[in-house]
Image (cartoon, rainbow, N blue to C red; front, side, top):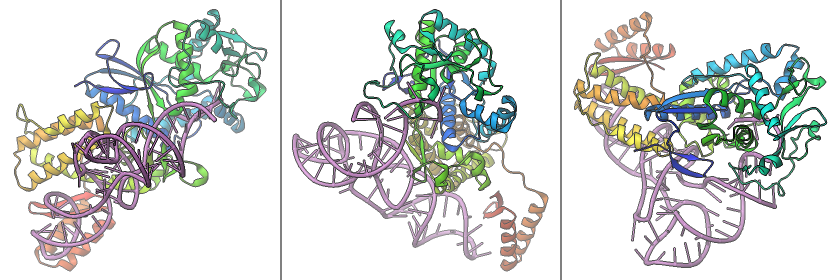
Length: 468
RNA sequence: GGCGGGGUAGCCAAGUGGUAAGGCACGGCUCUGCAAAAGCUGCAUCGUCGGUUCGAUUCCGACCCUCGCCUCCA
């Protein structure tokens, strides 16, 4: 069964067929490195990771590109305020971003281009648009893209959503220096240097200045993935104007269809409210880790809801994520113990988990149904384990199926926590006390272990220590 | 004002024209010295009001509530 995805271009779920199978070019709008990414940003990046992993699970060879936006108004302002250089300012946030991405179990994108490394491509693209008569230099020295000229060539502006310029409200975010545009719909490709930019400017045939926001993504994706590629994703807020403008610039410059499938991830609420610093519900990954949660717990929670639905992220939910993951860990751990290092899965093992999971995830990434399949498998596997109804080889088959599934989910613990000698010694002492039926002493030790962060569990086959 | 999402148990969240997955939380039972883990088990008629239908949570209409975008916010 093929993979189906919702394409914003057609506003419908479509069979996914790449331009040149088995290769898939995928571009994801990355972070703007002016601060630590927040949990809402992370939802989008974890979503992108899920798409990539699902494609790989489906047998495609994915080339995943995620840009780093390091030229932007807020960045320039903070560079000026902090008296550093652009690179000194953005470097640490970029590093932090990549660390967090790893904590969240995201596979590293194959290419991570920075806007500042693509000035030549950006300038060349703008020049091409000017040569084609689709861009103009205004009185303020900036270069703008002309929507009217673009539409005059028979091109369609408004592919991702219905636009009605008559009914639109001029936003409050229109920069005061953009009065020189011929039409409000036009957008900046190159912004002329202003004193507030400080040292952040580049030379170009259009004068000193810096690129607009949208153009960097077009320049980088066209360079790295070619003039037409398969997938482009980002947060739903980017549909307009960012992605719409990317399409206009790219198709205006190349005359070819830009992207075949556009995927957009919905935003999230935190504790039922729109995330905002004043409400105290604004979290970075680091904030959550400081509260004792791990990256994989955050990943799990972000992956519990369908990507096109607004998701309500709560701290209660995060606590629940911890418990739910422990349930999976427990089951997998038992399977590992039973399977041992050498058991191999018998050929033709039929593990329903695989088919159920595949059907769910292939249906426009129905992750909730996919988790349903996982937990159903956990329950049934636990039952068999409790009844001693699994052979080591069967356990290995289950593990193999799980490993494949986890290639998409990315939440499994790779190794069991190592138990320190002192903890083992205490556990031994407890076993002795228990054997002597000194339950008072044995419970004391159990509490000590708990205080040290270790849970001890008794079972017919002996004790088991688990890191809390 | 324009465009587009949502409203399903205490919380999170799938789904279907024929009486509603899964996770967390909570209660009971089994196992256990006690726990934990695991198993069994209990827990919703799907925002409101109409309509279509043999039958609607699922289709249509109205209404209420809520969220997002509308020019550099994931």
